[in-house]
Length: 223
Image (cartoon, rainbow, N blue to C red; front, top):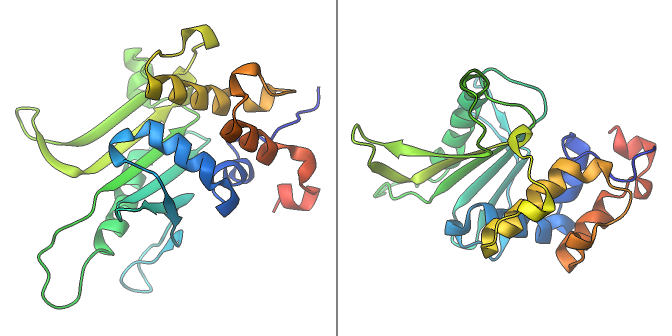
């Protein structure tokens, strides 16, 4: 059966659903439920290409780079194929929104929060070996006593192969239920031929409309 909706694990599909100005309501809703502590009510897209300090330095090209109304920085990276050093890459990418906050002249070094989110269509190697099956991994800097040492840098990794919930298993809390909907949407979008009843609200209907393959030419889909 021919797919009706784009694959969100492709650059084209992910951009259409979450990475364009017209997609902002979907991105806001998704991130607000993934990282509720960020208090996201609006977002501004930022330049996705970040250069190093010299021409010889390697640059970072984000899938999505945005900030909330408080100026906190949010990077979203999609990774379809397994990459051994994906964690290293996200740490490297996080250094750019940290460095760009530097002010010329007198500066007290106060930084805005930086969130780095990775949506993975593979499992981390160590989780395969250990048999761990958690979907969401939230990582922050902690000391030797496991106490939070620095709260303004947060990495959130979604191991999507571990998301195996069916609709009747969705969380009951407001954020958890909504987030489960988004994860279910991302995981199964390419398999849908119509909009399931659980997605009959405005934001998800917009997401399905943005995801319709028929809206785009062959050239657009392979650009």
